[in-house]
Image (cartoon, rainbow, N blue to C red; front, top):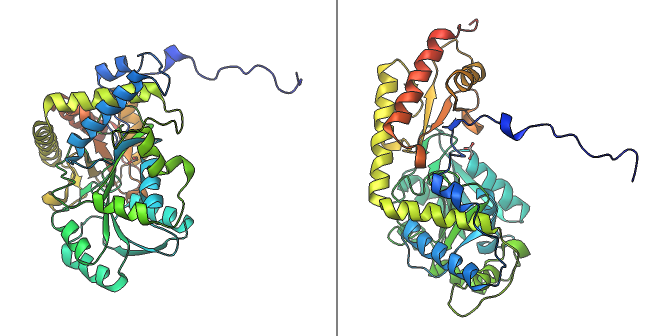
Length: 388
Ligand code: GLV
């Protein structure tokens, strides 16, 4: 053994980690049943139980995305892995991807696309607003892209994009429609088939109240045809053609591709069951009602919402402006230390300009919403305004 490489001393003791109410834009706390699911047995990637879990996950995802497509499965990795899978499988080098940019995730998509040699072009709007069909049609006409990338719920801005009519519009111009639903899925209505969405990815750690690390994706028939015709090779790890074989998407293959994490698979399966038990319409309604109550109480107590139009506000993540003179970091720390609630500051275009507060999944209750507002009022009273 090298004298310079010794047994490391742990920097953290398990017992000292404080449990917080996670009310940022994600991760969210876990359903108790999901915590339990994480301790289920580890399975080999070719046994029957493993394939049954995958089948349960695929069926749950079809319900979640509201789709009858065959090409639905989960990617090993966080939401970014879903983003990378969708972009790299659908669009080849030198093809054009149009990005409807209003938040940080669109910026990430641009970064990824550029790395794959894709011609990434963007249309931008102020980050407190959402797109209308006319703005997008002009750009589709101009660029004739292979695909349009758009974010449904944007956790960096707290906006929700209306997607109705967008699929038809894209298809009229020969473009595929790619949608990021990381922070909207489960908490906000989404209809993959009815809205003509061609590729969608989501995450497990937001309204699904599971751990990060496994990301649902789905592709329409139109997208599948494009993938089957493509000339380029996506990364091996994200190759959807190979993953479809592993996930038995067409009912005739049980192939080994890579070793997925059984605890994450058990967890995702359980999160989906929690949503199926509640039903999507009921869960969507719960998010809309609780967040509307939260916003109303915030406004009654002198807070300003960042997003001016109510119809643009996301039901899972709310962006809030603090009264002048308060320091965002200090404010968040005070609430964490005195109320055990974790809120987040802004990100990307909202950095230093707002709080981002997530009330979703297992945390989507009136009690949580009230506890956050009460903590926020207390922090206003107890923190001195910094010098202006
Ligand atoms: C992460 O998803 C974030 O919104 O901060």
